[in-house]
Length: 355
Length: 284
Image (cartoon, rainbow over all chains, first blue to last red; front, side, top):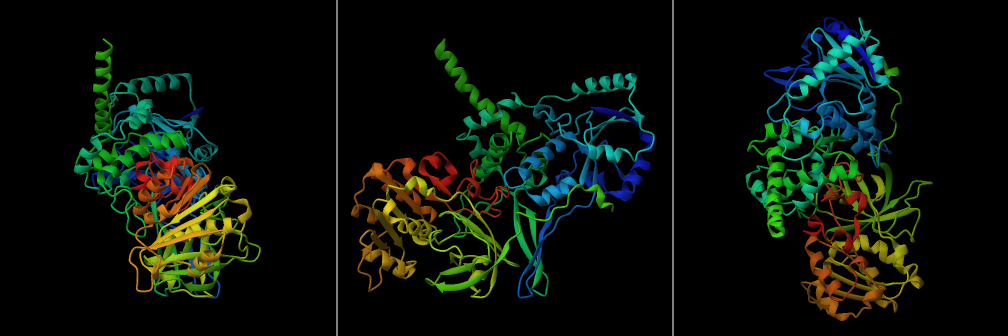
């Protein structure tokens, strides 16, 4: 691991230099909320921030993304894939969202690689920020092991007051750091200060789950028939809000759009939601997941059991956005703890029998 | 923008359909047409019976359609039997010979014919379910010596909805094919069996240990046909089903075809009953 020290006061200058070569996207205020968007002025960047409304996933998997352009006017059809490969830098990514991007890399890289995602991913450099205090009452990043960077990152900043500690995780990151002025090697004293900040932050975050995250797949495995799904299904509005704000949701629909010549147009990928009615319906009208309880259960099983099985990653990073977005206050922490408590009576009965 | 910052430029896409020519369109019923698609020079589909392709009508959309022709029949074209039921399939029905469509695939696992050789084959398609099974049936018939009995129980709602009538007539005349047809609602000319497909099962006796049973049909049909198969003591691992889902991408990304942890587009659409009997979302 390579560690550098960078004076905070030089940040606007660095961002201006970056903007010469890259599309610069960063966390910034929109009203009283945070969004990731292209920065007009370096001073718009806000690094110490609450969770953004939408996760930075939207830069790698946009809500609307053109996959193909076509023209059917000639005797042969012209169809071309569209790739967004414009060099992009994203500043201010929380480590939970960075973990989510690592999972996305697996989802779009495993099996049939998705070149549209990969093109954008290759062209994008991610600059993450160490979270020194909880950013939301709903987050449970400590439980999900996402309080620090995953193995795969480009540049990672830690706020040490007047300077940032910058960890370089990739060649891509190093290339970007070259344009920064005033970067110096870390001294033993810097390491000591970093150590102090890092150990100080741990106790500011609390565990929210009543059990360890490694138990999640087996807890879910025991809970498929739980009554809780029916109880939550009665409550859930099936609005899909949880999917839309989720940094790991990747389901999509594909739609064609034609211009008014009716000959040319594009094929577009659009975010979709497994919580919406008809998500699992087929042409004849049959819907294989027609009730809300089954859809909600599928979302939990997908994140906490199926994705660990398929990709080796739990499909939730504990950002808490879905809990905040839920109109009827269904939160993953409460659902998972409830499932856990429902397993306890059986355990105590067994113990009584043994006694 | 300095594009030298990007390591390699992408040129191809898993979502890019290949333009292919419709060479023939034959109406089969009021709702279904059989499309013959010409393969471009030098291109081979290399499909297995039971696989599907993603069919594009540019400007309208894309949908998964099972391949209806057998790999044993032609390597210069293939056939798709399409019911008009939504936007894409209605647009397809408006196309004719000489028109272009987009094709991706083939996708999915298809039937493992190797495992079926030497066995008695019991096919029980319902309605449009004959479209994908026809590929397998013809594959078996073209390699007839390597299989035991071939039994086909086919049910449709009405005589006018029976698909591939000429082929049904041909199968009927073959000594080595036991074909039984049924319709729910007969017309004046219908002289055959009346009732849902399960009413055909008492007409046949099978050797359960040596029989492979295959079904495909509307979602509601599976549980009843499965009960018949199991009632004849056919082992769960020898019962095969081809399942329908809205495989939007065909490559395990879009999430629409998931049943519990399984992506139907990657691991299916063909499953043995043993593989899916514990999956709540597979059949209901």
